[in-house]
Amino acid sequence: MNRRTLLSLPLALPLAAQSPKPKRINKAIELLAQGQPIYYTGATGGAGYEEGKRMSQTWADYINYEMEHGQLDFSALKAFMRGLIDGGPTKSGHRTPAVIATLPVLGVSKAHMEANFWVVQQALLTGIHGILLCHARDPEAIKTFVSACRYVDSNPVAGLPEGMLGNGSQGGPATIWGLTPAEYKEVADPWPLNPNGEFLLGLKIEDRFALADAEKVAAVPGIGFAEWGPGDMGLSLRRPDGHGANNELDPEMASARSRVLKACKANKLAFLNTVRPNDVEEMIKEGVMIGSGGQEAAAKGRKFTKRTMPW
Image 1 (cartoon, rainbow, N blue to C red):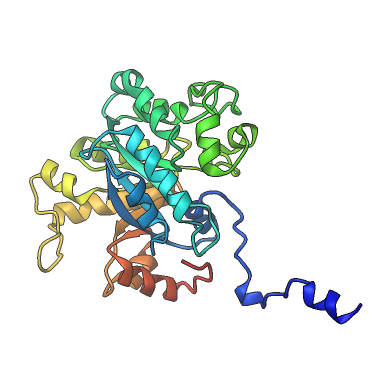
Image 2 (tube, rainbow, N blue to C red):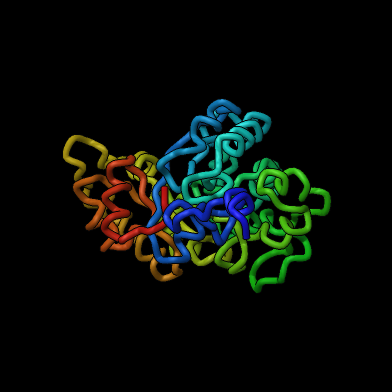
């Protein structure tokens, strides 16, 4: 080999400088499957392309895109997803951070969910990676919610209705995920129900009615995580939500939190809770696997669990 040929060869990058190789589309699922806690930040419904591009390098593992009370605008959400792509990839090598949306469709009854499941599907067709269902009261509503997130020919699961996603829905989200439509359809399914699924579905067990059936709603197949929603739980129980200066919980609120945490552990769901720099380690020890609370708390939690994936 002559010198000219040698100089024309690409230089080998040191191992630390090589691009990370993600094993999954959904960064949040990839970490949870490793037993690593994850941390999120928020975006409000109506955020468009520029906001997506700005958030593409977020410190967070996933973005909670709020449309329960925020603007229900699927065009803006799809533009947000394109912005994430154009600003990416993430430092972990994922095409985008995971995006999980909340919707104005609630888990209050089977009839409500059957009438409004199309909202769930329209959200998924923008290319997001999951949905957090608010006011998850009724197990039958949650079963309908899960089936709305599965293709008609998905593997049948005892106790769940047949999937409701139909042919022709693959193309748009496949483009966002960087897959072919056929590849997308293979992984567009809830995890861990489907070990290869890339949808992460969650529940807000956040009022006294949901709390009364916490064990039943948490047991519905296809759900990956849950939270106890202290803001709405406080309104429902007529108790302070613990977000005051001393962060102390009223005994009835503490009991509600404990019940939801226990239901999550019994059903192997990741439990979501606020974490702060001064308590993140204790929260993780208790069983919190999804944390809100900001970058400083996340950095401390990642160090505590010896996280190796870049963020």
